Image (cartoon, rainbow, N blue to C red; front, side):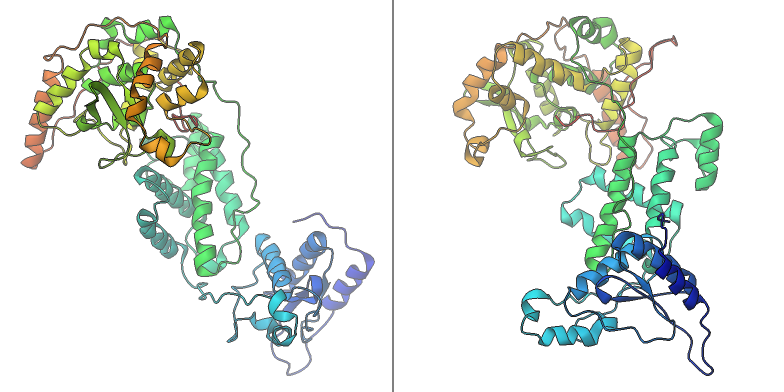
Length: 536
């Protein structure tokens, strides 16, 4: 409720209205409040009439109660009727005062204001000043779940979200329903949005994955989280979930006549200080690429992902989603394509599309021999058998590296994750004297004032220059034995076995990726709830 101190006139008017009694044989009373510009809004009860007076008086400086048996006065002809009417209705709706879904008369005007609107229509100044409202079907009876199903059905064709984004959106909408319950669209208010945000601020991390919360109601989940001292969602994650639900209601507002988005102006949690992601240091890289540590990485992706990130500066997803045909020879120079030309591949943005020459040390480590091995076995993806989580090729492997390999095997502290390879590459490139534009051509950052032709097609003429720039970067040396064709043969044997079992409709054994070291006290892993890219 807004803080409001009524003036004497309003107090007297409220008292006189409260004392009114219906005349004999008079139909049931209807409750109105007069807002700015003379417009009148019908509300559901006398209590809501008083609340509406308070809200409108505080927010719009003009309001008056009307007798429940009086005919609503015609709106003033000197103001924008439609805008004023909508502003007042949205204000009341946002405070939980129901005014009903707007109805449109046969000429497309608000039903309660039809006579005045028609007069405006006939005015010589009307057509230029008052646009006819668009006809929107009355969807007040439709349930929120029905509209959510409709919304999710159109997402794949809208190109608004990738597969992982659609999964996260569906999860957020499901949480919203658990918090507020299903209801007709007419019953949705800003109070529902506020309840959802406040609940998400207290919501435990990974609640859908942990057995302790299985089958519990929202209240029970919060109570259990308090008892066990569970870690809560970060402000970034809360805001992301709210953004998904806000997007749904914006879709409903535009397509189904919802008068306002209930998440507009709802207070969100403020961001908190984040770990500053720093480049890997030389000692940290020595630990990451220590032969004894690398032996714990049994799958080729565990071995090659950090190596490729070190020598290309590529993002986790970009490297994880590579196909064998993304590695090719152009003008006698081995290169890697970071693109979205094959099924499942995604780019962070258009600037991420690039061709990067392979570093000489990467070639010396036998990377091209590995590519030839995978090609000879008939696989299309460079890292066959690596799980993709809802379209994100790097999610699962990145989770294993960030939460197990780096902190527990290599002993790295908080804040050190896979993305620090990219930071190291960019940091060393800057130290080498390369200008930002040269670095961006290698890393896929956006270049200002670059034409589409130059970005996408003028590649071969600059490959030699890019190779020279790449070799000038003083990357920290790493000392690992070159690739041995027998190195990952057990992985490929297990993969073939799993494929045969799938063909025979039997459950395959999971591929081993990391062997856990003996238990010991180690620094806690950094929990990355936001994007691994950090906007880079």
